[in-house]
Length: 118
Image 1 (cartoon, rainbow, N blue to C red):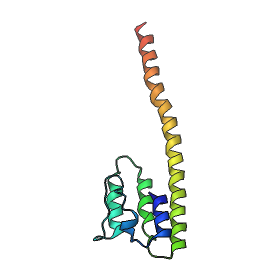
Image 2: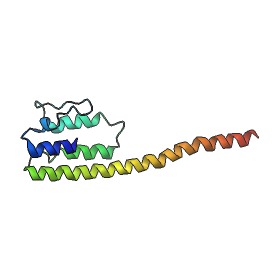
Image 3: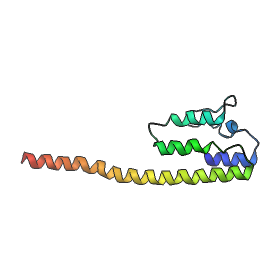
Image 4: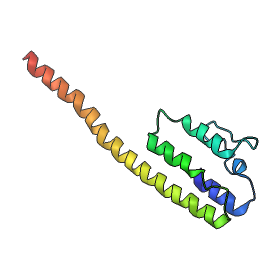
């Protein structure tokens, strides 16, 4: 989403709703409401699957967007792309670590139950 918006910022003069008009995750941005409010509504759709820190980063993304020159906006998008990639890497590491625990706990419980039955 962010990379697509960066390309559009560089090569078009669309407003923010137009830059993010790809119907992101079932959410359609419109021109009749402030973009940052719409973006916050969109991020709240994911409050059950994203950590609060992730939602905060996504919401902070919109504060400086659309208020400066093209190069500044591109740097802003690059910064948030980097931040979100770091969070994604951390989430993958957490999932890998916790995935091992989830697989180990039932096995351990099964072994413990078998020992108790013997």
